[in-house]
Image (cartoon, rainbow, N blue to C red; front, side, top):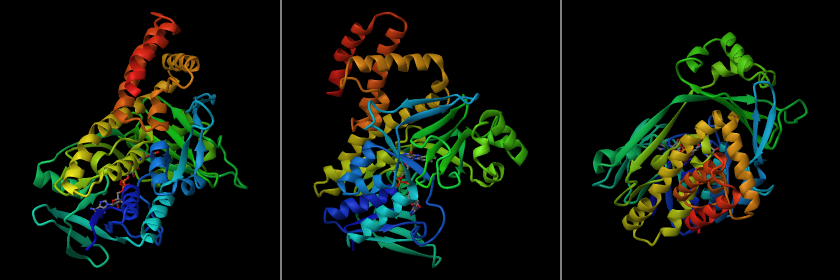
Length: 441
Ligand SMILES: Cc1cc2nc3c(=O)[nH]c(=O)nc-3n(C[C@H](O)[C@H](O)[C@H](O)COP(=O)(O)OP(=O)(O)OC[C@H]3O[C@@H](n4cnc5c(N)ncnc54)[C@H](O)[C@@H]3O)c2cc1C
C-alpha cells in the first residue's frame, strides 16, 4: 500500500504527487479520465493558461520551472482592443523581467504526470472515478470506467485534488459536516482558435494578453507557441446580449461584426467553430474546513475561483509548496494546520478574481479607472521598489493573497485622495510608508 492516495491527476494532483515523491513518499493517484498522453481529446478546462510567480516557484521546487518556461509564450502586458480598432498596451510589471506566461494546459499536465511517474514512487491509475469515501473505514470506492466495475481501496491518508466538483469534498460534507458554498457566475465562456498566419506568424501582437472589453462581456486571447491564439468569449448565459441569443451562424457573425470587428476576419469559420464549442460554467467554491482527520482537499477541490486573475492553478500550485513545507509526519495535525492557515488566502484570491472580472470587461476602458492607473504609475515611479500594485503583488510576488487584497484596498484609498486632489504626491508617499509598508514588511 502506498503512503498516500490522491484523487485527480490534474495539474495540482500531478504536481503534488511529484512533490511528495521527491520527499520519499509513495503515492497512488486515481484519475477519472483516460491517460491524456495516449489518447487525443480534452485535457479539461481551457486550452491554455497563464502561469506566474507562485506557480513558477512551485515548479522550481521540483526542478521543472525551466522546462515549463521553454514551452511558454511570455505576455508582457494587456493589449486592449477598442471597438474602433484602437490598440493600447498596458505593461503588467515594472520592467521587462515581469511578465506572465501563456502555457498549454495539456502540455503542462502531461509533463507533470510523466515526471511524477519517472520518480518511481508514483503510480497513476486512469479511468478510476472516486464515487465514495468512507471516513470511518478509511476506504475509497472507485468505479473502473474501462471495466465498468466498482472496487474498494484502503486509503488511510487521502488528498482530493479532484477539481471543482470534488467527490471527496462531497463525502466530507456528508460525513464530516464540512460547509461548502458554491456561487456560479451568470456568465459562461466559449473558447475559439484564432489560427497562425500562413507560414506560422502571429496574427496579433505576440507577447500580450489581448482583451476586447465591452462592459457586460469581453473577449480575450492568449498566444500559443505555434502562432495561434486561444480566444475566450465571456458572456451572460441569458438576456441580451447572451449565449442564448447566439444560436445560429448568422447571429454569431453579426455579434462579432458588431462588437469585435477586428477579430472576426482573423478567425476563419468562426460561426461554425463557435456553435460547436462547449459552453463552460464558472464557479467559486469555498469549503470549510478543507481537512478532516487524515483527509485533505487541495487546489480547485478546496477553492475553485473564477479565472479573471489567472490565479486558479497558480494558487493550487502554491498550496502544494505550502503543504510540503508544513509536513512533519503527523497527517491529521499537518493537514488541519495547513488548511487553517491557507483558507483566508484562498478566500482573498476568490474575491480578487471576481473583482477582476469587472475590471477587465469594464474598467480597462473607463476614463476614471485609466486616470487612477496613471496616478498609480506616477506614484510608483516616485517610489522605485517601494510600491507594488495589487496586480503585481498577486502575480509577481508570493505575498499572501489576503495581504495583497488588503494592500489593494489601502491603495485605492490613497489613490482616491490623489484623484480628488485632497493631497499631492508627497502626502501620498507618506501614506504609503505609514499604511502599506508595514503591512507588506
Ligand atoms: C477558462 C479558464 C481559464 C483559466 N485560466 C487560468 C489561468 O490563466 N491561470 C491559472 O492559474 N488558472 C486558470 N484557470 C484555473 C485552473 O484551470 C484551475 O485552477 C486548475 O485547473 C485547478 O487544477 P486542479 O488540479 O485543482 O483541478 P482540475 O484541473 O479540475 O483537475 C482535477 C482532476 O481530477 C479529475 N477528477 C475529477 N473528479 C474525479 C473523481 N471523482 N475521481 C477521480 N478523478 C477525478 C479530473 O478528471 C481532473 O483530471 C482557468 C480556468 C478556466 C475555466
